Image 1 (cartoon, rainbow, N blue to C red):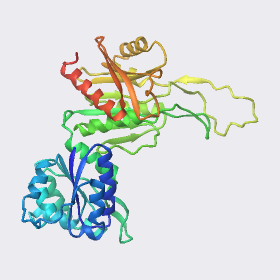
Image 2: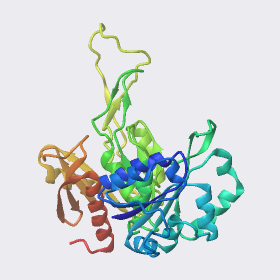
Image 3: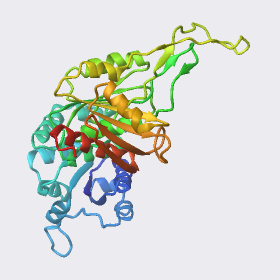
Image 4: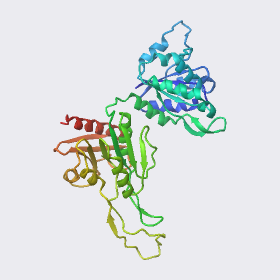
Length: 396
């Protein structure tokens, strides 16, 4: 992805250095455009050394070349301005084209992502919000600033979002909207069942696969809800996250969220059983080993399959250690799912915790597609490609 990174004047300019690196980590070729004010916070040399390209900051080059902004804009697949100061917001909204950065944005035919960052009262000012609305009307993506301590020492909204958030915003802006207009629900992570106030029953799920699926759905334009068990992951950009703990909580949240869903992907590792009785005090080590009676948890996929509309595509996940295909097909049929994504712990690079996965997708008509080992984000893309094919009737 060819990306123009615009940097304007503000303390948050230092974060643009990290954003540059994150873009490069994800395969982007980055060219940097700076305003004169930006140079007072971070020098050109930093960006030129890291990007491997000269920084563009002078609209009128020494050799008289005046079309550099046009060439750069035509080259780009995406333009991201981070931080985007109140001054630059105003120039972009009103057409005041007096520097290299604004000229480049105005010449761009690709998606433009803006990350406003400024002090609290500047952000609150009506003119700032008016300018932001004008720019949204132009089709630009604006990533709302975060709340926290600002350079002035005030606490409030105005902080530039973290590079990871902006990276996701750029990906979302350039990803074709193949799921636009659809309502998607994804479940992810483990569930946790208390034994006493200290101990619990759970599993090794980290939620990485489900979060990758939710992030990819949102990038493709779906209105996405993520029902998540306890994990150490931030909510994906553009996704509504509902946090739950137990299997019963996940059952309630998922069945409610899925009422009007077009696609439901049940990726969470839900506990099949829970303790019949939860101790109110900690089980002591010097007591006799406890006998724990377990009772079944509600079966979310089974319930969704019973109530599935003909227009809804229901996708389950199956993690198996033996007789994998037979067990996955049995789950698919018993639960009335359309597709099942099979993980085998016998496959190197599959399963909980890691950043890669190996899966086989099975459909209710007997079709099978095995996806080779890849990152979970890449596997998520391929899974959505297959879901879209299935919905269109082009699965083969």
